[in-house]
Image 1 (cartoon, rainbow, N blue to C red):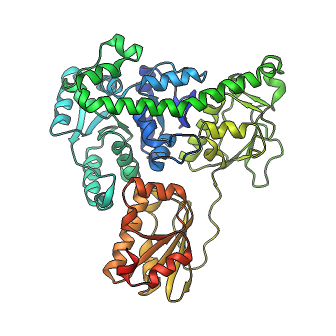
Image 2: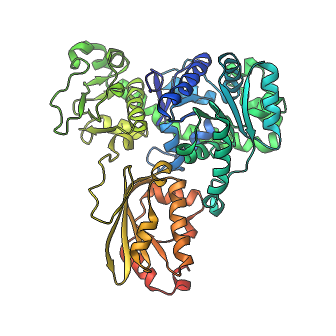
Length: 529
């Protein structure tokens, strides 16, 4: 089966949302679970509500992400549904209405019903106390024949020093799950814990699909009641939830909705302006066939043999429908998207391009953009928070010199010549959970032969919590040997993730190499002040 997201994707504040009905979401989940048996790649499903958006994103299109790791997870998830009605409303305002919202509270019971018929195995992870077991019992009662592979309720950490020391606990939980051989894993740790936990353990889990479902176990067993159906359909369920627990929820909903409004207003106004600005061209443009080369045609292919997708002047829903052969399904290693002639993009087209980006990223195939810098669509991509998707560097790191510690992915740890007796190394590329598992830092520590280490992160494009844990383990190893590790040149996403996970004070770090070398030259008590 094609390993792509659903055919229609809507882009909401830079997050690709798959346009599915609840029934389609259930079928798609089981298809993804079956795909694991073919390629062994666990899939992740995320149900996005206001909390996800406000936790992941900054206030304005120009602000850095509030949680870079969570944003990365939302963008790369294999299936993303709209859990909250505000997400559906925003999609409508942008001219790309979603068929329906698909909440975790609706998806889990419907999925259990389908799995009872198909024979797939379900594992329930998380929840407070024995709520997971109660939910499992209730699901079996409602769906005779449902196969429960297991139930487990560990406590997980996603911030602070405890997060960095949680690898052993994670390993025990992963071993339990793998031994049970489930097809679908329901994770009830709450956002963003559940998404981060699955992401950091994805490379060693043997499960078809992981789905974060928040407090859904509480709904299943009846501890928390759902709003009446008419309130759910009209988007008033949040009022019902606040009425049930006003002291805890009113501030959360008020702040979340206010922030979403502030985040969305510039995007909606820009979208309206763009349609007004290009209204005549949209009315009198040539046919789609006249605007673009036939699907599959390479116009001036790049020297590296990559496929080239040349976008026309107007890229909208009509153009998307004309693409009979989706570029995210071809087998070429690299794709170049040429924006040189493009002057208008609508939300449907942006969702289509985001789908291409996501699919190729998840299958380790490169995609890059050309001709963006001086085109009118540059401002649109920035406003829709997708500029970094298409301008992200995808080139592989340069070949490592002899002795460099290389992983099999796009990350490189390259030792350099020592400075004043201090070892120096440069870390480049992306250091995520999958690549961190392949990177051997012990070899680097052995090469330094007792020296302190300056680790330059200026070429490190992205790091997740697992990558931070790897750096922390290296630091602890050095400390146990009476040596020190200093970091320098942290890019904004790396620094922001350190701050939001409350790890900044655990590392000796500086802006430049010179400052970091000066810190390492000081006595340890002075350097940590």
